[in-house]
Amino acid sequence: MREVVFRVLAERPGHLEAQAESLPIRITAPTLEELQHEAREALIQYMGPAHCAYRVRVRRDPGAAVSSIRPVGRPAVLCR
Image 1 (cartoon, rainbow, N blue to C red):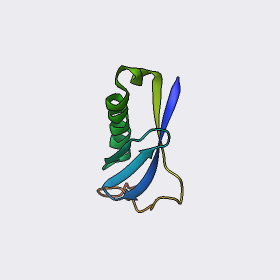
Image 2: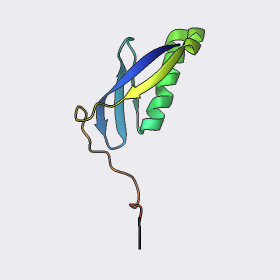
Image 3: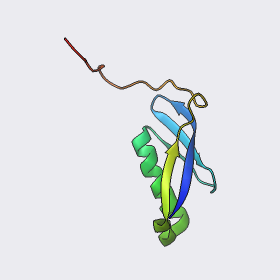
Image 4: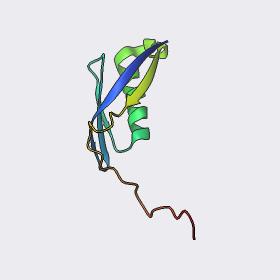
């Protein structure tokens, strides 16, 4: 099975942007989970039925993208 790696280029609260390393595909999404879904959808649209032979990976380079993403909502309480 082959693999298409999407590298996160921009990271802001509510906005992630990624580019495929080996294909001319660029995607955006509000969360990392939705970015993975959008990557798969873009691959299906780009490759058609051949998309089944590819695995999609999303990579974030530590320190390369702006790491200003914070959890939405109240912080979890670990102990009381």
